[in-house]
Length: 179
Image (cartoon, rainbow, N blue to C red):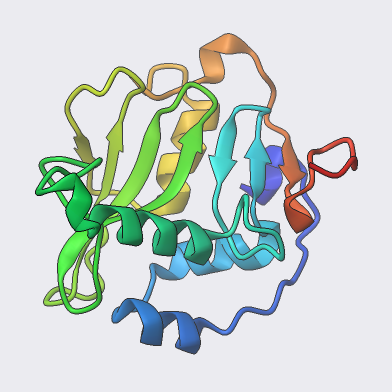
């Protein structure tokens, strides 16, 4: 990903033990490396990557907490935004979102506390269709989205958007103006 984007690693320090404690499971090693290199932000002006970010917009943990809160809110009944799954709760099995697109495609891991180390990527396109399962790493999935025009329905390489990265630090828009 570094070579693909021409990005200079940020070397972000993240307290992964605290995150593991809150989630109840460790995160994929390649995802943690991506976070330390990129932080949170946007690839190719359209693929949103949730990392650890001082703002809330691209902060993985903040987004997970909000999703879990909504998913567990009894006022919505038994309906889940990630049906037929649920949002991962500590000690359970469910989805944790790590990315999306400007078109509302969703990229998640299916995390099972009883199977730590197993992180299939589940992706769903903006039309709310079925979830697609990929037994590949987060970084390979992200690479294929950006560089493989034949990676359908999620590949964006055919749109010739380039392979750039813009950090989302502080939750500010990319032109630096406050929200």
